[in-house]
Length: 106
Image (cartoon, rainbow, N blue to C red; front, side):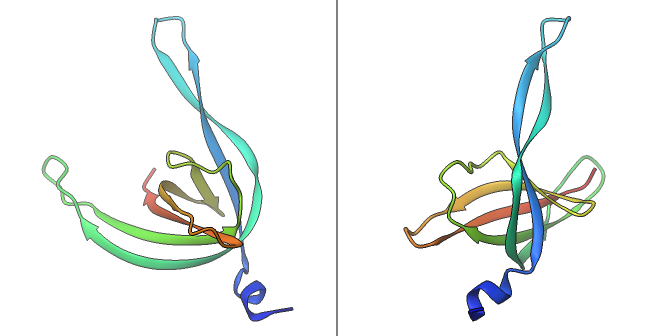
């Protein structure tokens, strides 16, 4: 086992959004399982945002996975009970891609 493979110790489920029409003329979003992948997870920053009278903190994470061409910003990664919104996909043409994500507080 190479060192690069050894670092990918976390298992996450990738999900894509599926918009379905509801009876009121709007739409509901459900999440479709796109498979599980091994990943290296690392915290990459944090911050605060203003939200009404509170200042919730946000945490940014990076997920390095083996190359997939279907992953898009707007998908999400589920790691145990934690949910991360994928904000960007960094693809430099190598064997792996990096998913830049923020943890969603449900």
